Structure formats: C-alpha cells, structure tokens
Amino acid sequence: MGSPLHLSLLLLLAAAHPGGGIPLGRPAEQVPGPRGSPPPPSGTPAPFWVHLSPQFVAVRPGDSVWLNCSSSCPLPQECSLRTRLQRGKTLSGPGWVSYQLLDVRAWSSDVLCFVTCAGTSHGATARITTYKSPRSVILEPPVSVGGEYTLRCHVTHVFPVGLMVVTLRRGGRVIYSESLERFTSLELANVTLTYAFRPGPRDFWQPVICHARLNLDGLVVRSSSAPVTLAWNPASKVWASSSIAVLVGILLAVGAAYLGKCLTVQSQA
Image 1 (cartoon, rainbow, N blue to C red):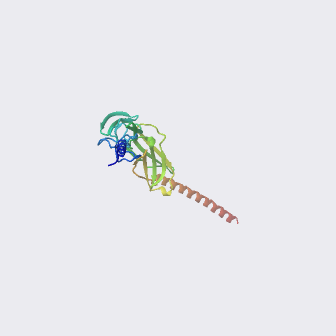
Image 2: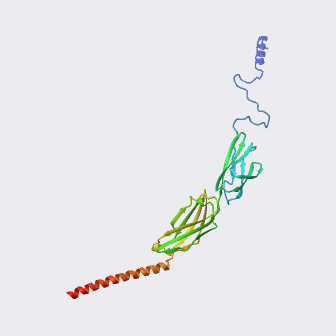
Image 3: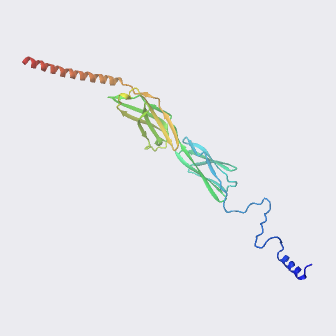
C-alpha cells in the first residue's frame, strides 16, 4: 500500500480533473442537439428563382391575356405585378399567381413580376405586343404611260403601320423598299404604296410581288400579294412603231435630198 501522503495526492488530482481521460489543453467535443433540430442560421437567405410566362406574347388590339408568375420560394411573403395595362382577375395556387390583363392596345408593353422570399426580392419580365396582320396585300397590274410603268400595292387593315416595311420584288430581286416609320397611328389602317420606273429590256415578263413585313420586336409577320407580270404594253408597241415610222421617213427625206443634190451636181458638170 502506498503512504497516506501519496494517497492524498491522488485524491486531490482526481478532484481537480473529474472527467478523467481528457488531456489538458484539448477542448471537449460538442454534443449534438436533439434529433431533427434545424441547423443554426447562417444569415444568408436561400436562393430562389422567379419565372413569368409566357415571356413574349402577341395579341390583337383589344384582346386580353393571362400571365403566370411562379417561383421556387416555399413561403413567399409577397407577389406583385407591375404594369401600366388594365388588370382583371387574379388566380393563385401553391408557388404561382396568374394575372389577367384587359384590353391590350399598346403595341409593346413590359410587365414585371416581383416575389419576396425571406426578405429578398427577385423579379422576372415579360413583353406583350399587339398587332394585326394585313387582311390583304394586293398588287395592281402595272400601268404604262409614255414608257414609264407605275406599280401600286394596297395593304389593308394592318396594325401597327409604323412597324411595317413594304417591298417590291421583281424576279426575286428588290426593286423598291419603304419603311413606314412616319406613321404613328394606333388604329387599323389601309396603306397604298406607289412606285414608278422605266423598265429595261430584262424587266419585262418577270413576275413582280409586293411583300408586307411587320417587325414586332422579335416576331416577324409576313404577307405577300399574288404576282403580276411586267408585260410589254400594246400602247408602247404603237408608240414604238410610230417612232420607227417617223425615223424612217426622216431618213428617206434626207436620202432623197442628198440624191437630188448629187444629180444636180452631175448635170451641171
């Protein structure tokens, strides 16, 4: 047995370190909390997405449209829509809200949807475009006056006129093109394009087509007329025959005068 003094020292050491086996200077391991408890907050909100669909839609003037705003936020604090268009009904479900927009007439409108989740807001954008494709595109048969041909193309009931380009093609080649940006009316309109030119020999018997193209910020709407043929005008034939006859008459008169002068000179000699 050890001495009483040695036993007393052992008892004092045991009292000073009751957890026995943990070395001095080494921190004790943390004990996990109750099973299923959430992790401590990190201070950074979880990322989430927002989607507004359809992202691009084209409607006729005066029509209505539905836009759906959805997000991956499990518990959104707020969902709002920013637009200058007239609002209609609103429907909602888990993770989504649908908005109705009434009487859309502006040719282009941006709509924004914002969702707030855990104090953070994200947004998505959609664009609504209104248009009316031409009811008809009609190219009149060419009219010839004095060797000059005039083409007239009629584009009816189209909107917006200011975003339309009218092009005349002959045999696949552009002979004239005009942008109608100067027209700012927001109503359905009829447009007539007139083009006059003097054709060359290669221009005749070629099909001519009138094309109307609406450029709607990413959406292109095309309409075309039936082809017409640039034929040699009978009136031009008569004019050409008359011109040739006059020219022949002049040449004959000049030749006769010259021949008479030669005969006179010979008789005097």
